[in-house]
Image (cartoon, rainbow, N blue to C red; front, side):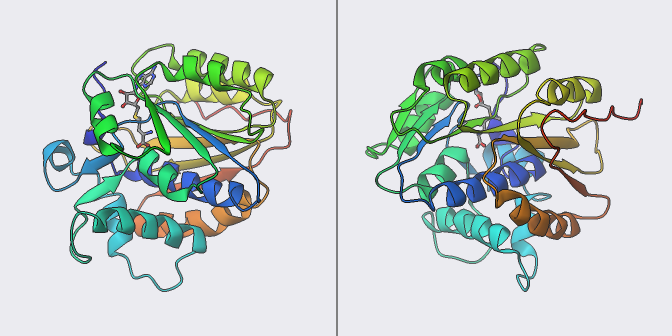
Length: 288
Ligand SMILES: C[S@@+](CC[C@H](N)C(=O)[O-])C[C@H]1O[C@@H](n2cnc3c(N)ncnc32)[C@H](O)[C@@H]1O
């Protein structure tokens, strides 16, 4: 396991993923019914932007850094709430104002979006990152941290007694068969709990593999959100969030939010939204 999310925390990919995650949490907790949330690949929970891994790549500056620095007039509601969650986490580490010191990972954003009645399980397998995640939530009894394979946890945790669930699947894509593992785990989860909301992040590096993955899920009700940034030095330049069984207001919120983000992340950044009717074919990507 070589992947460390600390190098990438707060980059354009996190911006898309965490914007969608925050809005999903808001929409799914609007009903007066309990929610179970599973974060299958949780990372460490919070990231130091001032030093360490993030400072070595500078990826956060071109992501969350640009959004935080942008004038706030006319910010779409979903983006404003995401930025407020980021600021609220950062303020735990010192006074407001100035550059961000720390960026919240998915477990922190989930924890901030949950109510007392909800339940949250976060899985992280890395021998260094799992203990860090445990320390991040030390003493917080509303989060259950497990150092175990998130795909196994997904199978074991569903269906949840709450009968409502959000599952975030955010693998590192180090393994060559990650798309296959992900698709198998998702199908398994859907067989056990068909009405759950599943939010999946994936890179668009190998466009054919990403296309095959999405095509294989064409029978499902999904909302797909993509972002593409100008490539620099062979770095990841495009990724997507695929939401299976999206709450109906998510699309509207993203249609408002993504153009705003696109305009502020810099020249050449493109976002796209795909809300295909179930069973419609996914057009093949242009051959490169
Ligand atoms: C992309 S990062 C997660 C980032 C986090 N979800 C966030 O948004 O802040 C993927 C994480 O999955 C962990 N990981 C890799 N394989 C895993 C597995 N099978 N089960 C659980 N965690 C795993 C990695 O150590 C890494 O920290």
